[in-house]
Length: 248
Image: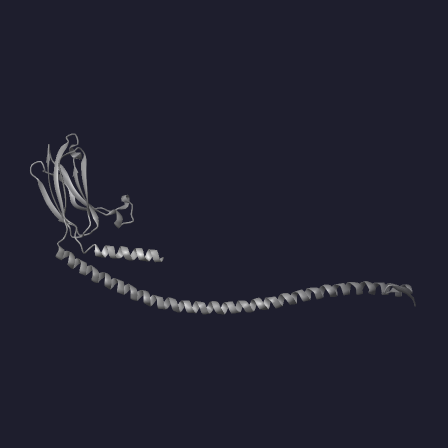
């Protein structure tokens, strides 16, 4: 991990921790007389865990099917959109929204995420419906947020302290292994230096012996030729010794 990566990780860590301390303002979504032929989806980003979503809607020209599901926020997972697992909060089913307004609410227990409200008319797509809805996202109270913030701080501090102690213990073992490895390397370097020095002496002796063998080979070759000449001269009663003639 580089210094830049470490600093970036620290900033991201505290941004996530401190985001628990401040509640966003309530957010409202409302629309009237929206034609729905097949289906309509309303994605609502939820930043704070413990937020509540209150909804109310009605339809004209007949009923619609309604459902709600949650999916992780895009920046909270490394998975692609196709791999994201969605959590069903309200099963998709037909409701009598054309008879009376349909109302409800639910609590978001995990954040960040995206709550998707779905109005479906595929069961009657030949007859388009007219939808009116109102949705409000209310964050937790300041008191609840403060308690959650303190809990998050204590939990994170405990986890960081435990991890630091584990890292210190592991570092001590790593340093001991490093010292042992360095001692082994120093010993091997000395042994290698001795072997290299010995190899130099061996190569010198090899050169000397090869020169000696070549010298003696030439001596032997000359002596053998002279010995043969001397024997031949002795058999003939005269000979040529060392390049000169003699009589017996």
